[in-house]
Image (tube, rainbow, N blue to C red; front, side, top):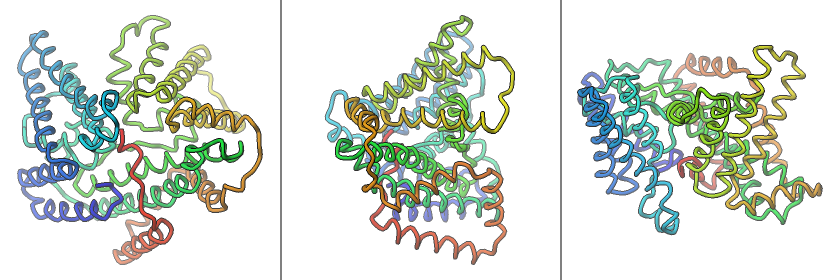
Length: 456
């Protein structure tokens, strides 16, 4: 049940009506939400109705156990139990294709639970580190841990933070309702009118058979993919944040105009923010050697290689992680050598943004390609310097320009747009949403492809 499907929005509507009907009774709200979470997962397979409650119960009991016992050995046993349960989920839902054919395993495990595992691990590791207390309500934890707007592809949010918002008095203000609808519609427009259009009209064809296209067309496809991936994933995040807001939960921002980054450190502060924060807090900081000169830089490389392998246990993902980790290490070393001297001037900033974007696009070649040989074929075709753009349509050029321009719009323009939308009468909002639906139907009538990150 993808977040762009009619079935998903029918499901959301029914859940919201039930949730709002019992808005004044916290226990009933949590029960409705928990039932919605499990019904959503059961749509992918009935065995999730046993698997997810079992894993959530293990994490809840592990948290309570670490809260109750001070003995370090006992606490390690509890956190080890949580690690074993969640890492097993991560391996089962992401990497069993090492042993089984992907088509077979996708049928057995159609919904990846890696984002669920990340959220659950953040809860128990925080308790083990004594950075946060264990929650006391079992029902509340179960509802927060499997929060359905985030279970497919994030944003990664600590269950305790979700629970804190779910257990306070529920009140959907008009401004929040308007913002939620704006986010949902904006996310659909990003996904269907930009991401899917670029993927269907250029990216997929070129990446599938790069040698049939000129060097310029391969280069155009790489740039188009960078935009398609961003608008696909950020579109999903907008829809998730909008749905969460309608349930009284403010989910964190996951993207902040990443292609305007001035270096790779800046890029990972703007791209998939909750995932990069998770890697930093729970993987990078857990590696040894932080006080030595060399190990912190090596740990950056190790962290990003593991982050790449989370996307898939193939060489292209490993190379993608290695390139990003190496670039982060070089950037960190340069910043340490240079000190606090500011880099000023618009020309200097523009050059740094341009160079960072080119490097990111280079790494996207490996991220998108199914094999290393396919990625090399694309790079060879680009290096051939053959010029032909007959397969790059005017529509692709226009959509790419619109997508690129969106990266440079001032942030306050977006907020002003949301506020303006919220202040308009309800019939104007309804008309705007209807126009968006019509535009989507006319321009993306072939249907929506699954969100890219729901595979991870």
